[in-house]
Image (tube, rainbow, N blue to C red; front, side, top):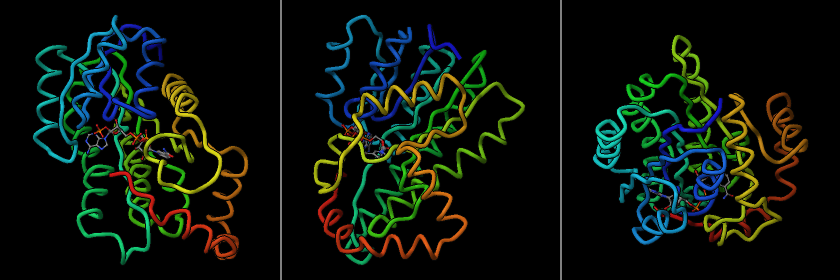
Amino acid sequence: MRLKGKKVLITGGSRGIGRCMIAELIKQGVKDIAVIARDKKNLERLPEDFEKTKFLLVNGNVGDIGVLREMSSKIEDQWGRLDVLINNAGIVSAGSLEDIPDEEIYDQVAVNLTAVLFLTKYCLPLLKSSREAAILNVSSGLGLLGMPFYSVYGSTKAGIRQFSDSLRRELKPFKISVTCVYPTATDTEMMQKFKGREMDSPEHVAEKSIQALMQKELHFIFGGEQRLKDHRLNFESPKKFDRQISDSYDQRREASQSHRAI
Ligand SMILES: NC(=O)c1ccc[n+]([C@@H]2O[C@H](COP(=O)([O-])OP(=O)(O)OC[C@H]3O[C@@H](n4cnc5c(N)ncnc54)[C@H](OP(=O)(O)O)[C@@H]3O)[C@@H](O)[C@H]2O)c1
């Protein structure tokens, strides 16, 4: 798929991986980009930083269905169609399940999963008006491999994976591709309170994700050969994988303890 002249909607494009995706889209010739995010200042900085791009901005929470409806109506009124939908906005609150406050369980499901289902539903008629459309969903390595202390976040991201497979098969009669990407730890604000290992840069994740979208790949898994091996082991011999994970139990608990970006 060539992106030149396409009309794109991205959630959470105001910073982190989403903002780097905007830079990448512009490099590929995109001139019209719609963005939803909560922080007004970060959102308003986009037209200043990317002067030649026409932005359609909605300042709000994707967890609020009214905000999603507002954005899809704006796109219908102003563009009459949508070519690319990127479901990127996400939040995390890690820790032992019993310790995660109830509202943070609800919010993670609302933002990371429910919002994606609703926004995609509202955008489908607009995507069907495009000659060649694409959906890019941002899952996570934690949506492939269930890790301790990420039971809620990981469940939402595994939901995104399943949604992507189902929707792709459902949309077979239409010209809409569905790509799902699975970043590993990436150096953004989301990871500021994570006391862990080396991370990918958001620029790298954005570049590879947009390439996967253009090549209509079904899945793109970050983390190299090791991540693919772990994925295979988890599927074929989950007990073996359990033993491997339990070796680093204390380290994982420590690293995730204050990991919260909500
Ligand atoms: N960083 C990682 O290590 C990593 C790894 C795997 C997957 N991912 C996934 O990659 C995606 C992007 O993450 P990131 O690392 O770039 O995070 P980030 O730096 O925290 O950026 C998140 C973006 O989403 C927006 N957002 C968050 N909650 C929102 C809400 N309720 N309504 C509207 N916008 C909202 C934020 O803007 P506002 O705060 O202004 O709303 C921001 O633009 C997420 O889906 C995340 O789960 C990240």
